[in-house]
Length: 206
Image (cartoon, rainbow, N blue to C red; front, side, top):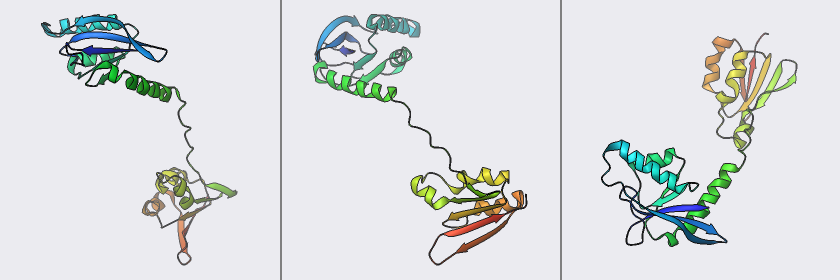
């Protein structure tokens, strides 16, 4: 693990655009030590071409080190580093006060990047209880996955029209289902017992 810092004459980080001494620290057996350093300045740069050239020299000097800490970083210098694959931290202070913290955060971020993505849960679909007759409980689905609306779960299934009956347990009759009636062609019955759920039955000829 290597971390580069841009430090001014006072020993604390300075703005990348202001320059200073760029020092690369290397971690070994839990301790940080200076590995190499160079003077760096963008002052007097004549236009973007020269500024990018100086940033290119800095990138070559940093070599395998892809983390840089400065008091602030913006504009062309920042984007040149980002383009070269650097992580740029903006932290005011002396390097010894933050190197371990930056290393810890970078390790955590690396572990997260390396972790496999969470499995994608399949979209729930109606269950065929007998040939052509399906049922689904939207209430139960939304208890586990509240981000799913009845429309997300059922619209494509209903539009395909490959069912004889479809029984839907829900809280209320979804307005969008009523709008599908003329397009798909089905009859609709809704029933509710007391304060229980709404049981909606769609029937069509196939």
